[in-house]
Image 1 (tube, rainbow, N blue to C red):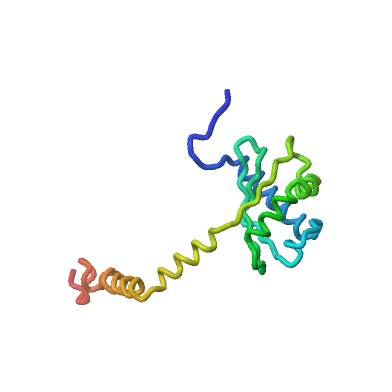
Image 2 (cartoon, rainbow, N blue to C red):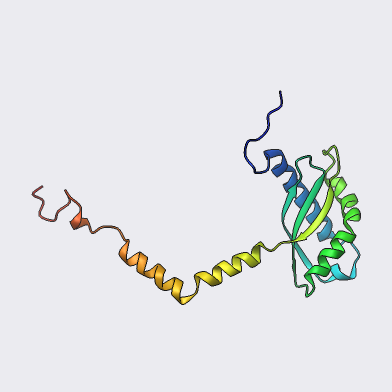
Length: 152
């Protein structure tokens, strides 16, 4: 009898395979096997790979570092996806089917930067400092049974 995950998140198998695919694609890109003008001077960080439930599609979230045209880097990766897939196949021999690679821009770092900028605003830091002053630990003298005279 087959069991299905009740949660909405990825299964352990999807997580394990996605990490293996991330390493394989990273190695292909590090070796510089892909010859494309848009990829020549770009350092590409693969932050996450998400596998489809049937493990046939791998969506790679990419952060191009040092590239002025991020969308151009993503389109170059998608143009060369079949070549990258062929090169990564030697690292993923244990898989029954080699997944199709899709590359997307990773915007999570931009979201982190926005949240960080919000937290550094003077209004927010003022509120955080006020909460820390009001909500600190109680004074040991105020706790019942812990008076300073020792007569409890």
